[in-house]
Length: 228
Image 1 (cartoon, rainbow, N blue to C red):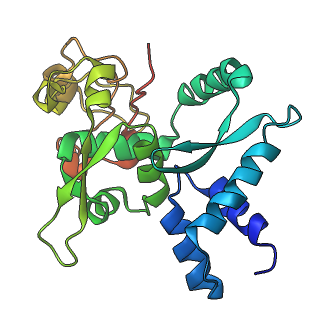
Image 2: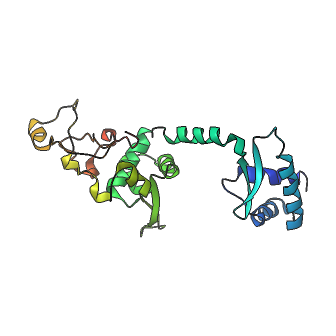
């Protein structure tokens, strides 16, 4: 079992959350056929814990949630917390905004349904929205393969001050933005109605051919979920 300690260290370091002893043992056995006992693992973990207590390291190995995880030391929590807040406040990409808007108005729906509306792959956008907790997995669909369904989260509702999705502004009630191609005057007369919208939903741009979400061009979504 060459470099056993380093392998255990790597597994704990790369895990997104605490990793259980059984998972470490199972992983090493599946990969290399190593038969590692829990007592041996615990001894190695103790050596690693002692190693990272040294002040030259800004993080330490701790036992948490019935497993092991590397965490930053308390002396650096303020700086780390500031960085996390900065990252959390970064604006979403246009692709993520389009995906969020589609989910908000058509939820719950699967990734393939989102991609059908947008016309492009949405894997990355969905992942980012999940990371920011703006959407959640809301069960599985009845179609082939039982695809995951996505819906907006409580955090989404809290951010926009909505009690439910029923409080989302209706497309027919939204302001018309200047349309470079040209917007019929009769449509402007019908649709340019002042309304109070949740922050960030002030501008959904659509033309006479886009009166429903199904026909709404993805280039015309202009929602900023972090607008103040």
